[in-house]
Amino acid sequence: MNLLTQNAKMKKTSIKNNAKIFNFSIPAYKTKSGRVTCPFAGGCQKFCYAQKGNYTRFPIVQELMEKKYELTKKNTFIPLMNEEIKKKKATHIRIHDSGDFYSPAYLQKWVDIATQNTNVIFYAYTKSIKFFIDGLKLPKNLKVIFSEGSKTDNLINVNKHRHARIFKNKELLQASGYIDASNNDLKAITSNKKVGLVYH
Image (tube, rainbow, N blue to C red):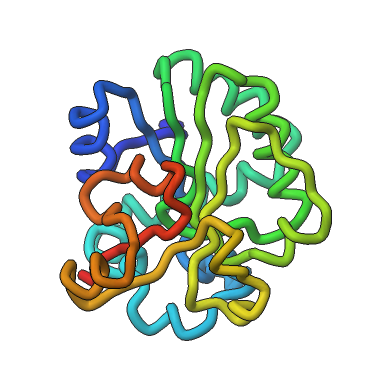
């Protein structure tokens, strides 16, 4: 199974940054069997891009993400991911361009993967904010961006936490002091903790 892939944005960002950036996806919000993959999703469900386009248009894409989700529950997930990272010679990995950290145990697997691959930068947009502010220690090469639109937005300290906000246009984004990561994904993990995305 091809665990790490590149969507159009990852390809563009890789070229812009002379890097090898890959993404890992699981089903958006729910699996076919009804298992929730985004447990803290709030109003974002209404405009979730991961439930549009190729994610829903092609059954083969849906099936692949279902298989990846099932794999995350197995003990073989960590060694298989480590092998895939080395094979692809990845420099950066975006965890979940679809789906989210659905449990603390699953999140811990990614913490372990990042710890075992210190030469790779891992990053993730997440609404599972509670899992991170309960005292979890992250390795330096695992960076998270708290996404607004969750059931627990009240846990986000916008002056302290790296967070993402969606804007209607670039003008509003820039006027609010946010960095535009709409077309260059690595801008999400710069020193500017205010990450802006234009709705599409």
